[in-house]
Image (tube, rainbow, N blue to C red; front, side):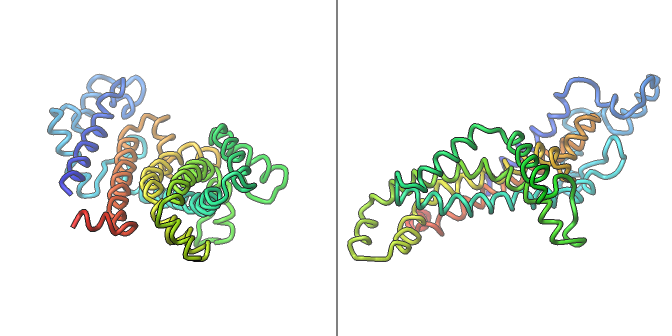
Length: 308
């Protein structure tokens, strides 16, 4: 817990300094062109930009701890409201992409390790190699062209809330989710295949085979569970990366998530919004990695005994 709080403090300092290190004066985003020096000075006083650095950091951190991220330079509305409105879109997109990636890569990785050199292994190697060489934005455009323009079976752009139409809601998510999940499928499949190949050669697995246990039981209970350490560790990193990676995907598919919020904020020099979104993303990343550490004893009793 102490390490988590220390990391959180360091992240908050880094995120706060983001605004300080950006070239230019933040006042430029707050005043119209041709503003007088008196007007610029009034704005600096209003937003506390003339206060000492430590005082501004303490004031900002105190507001963040109370859920107050400040007000947007452009809209003058609370940043927390904008994030609360858009965060569910990005989180749903990231979680669904993770679920799809695991649902595809786990069975493919397990079977590729069980039958190395088989047709599943060869096809998986070919597909993952092609996917690895294709950037996510290119893959997104290809999916739009194939399924949206040529086949016309899926919508291309836009967002429909679940409460309005559940079917249309998920149909608009298919292409963005596949775009995000494709790259993670490559990582998960190759990682799990390598770990499974090593696990299947261990004595307890060979003993289970000698006792005539069913193949599915050997793979699921004796091999997969022990081979999941690397997969679980990487999953914690990936979920944070997926939330950050929604910037490009949301721009391609015109989704109203945090990615599009950040892009618009960067274009309009609304630095306080960028600052808040980066902090929230870093917090989610730290929380996910902490949860990953807590799952290790559940996967292997030896870890639980070592920590007890």
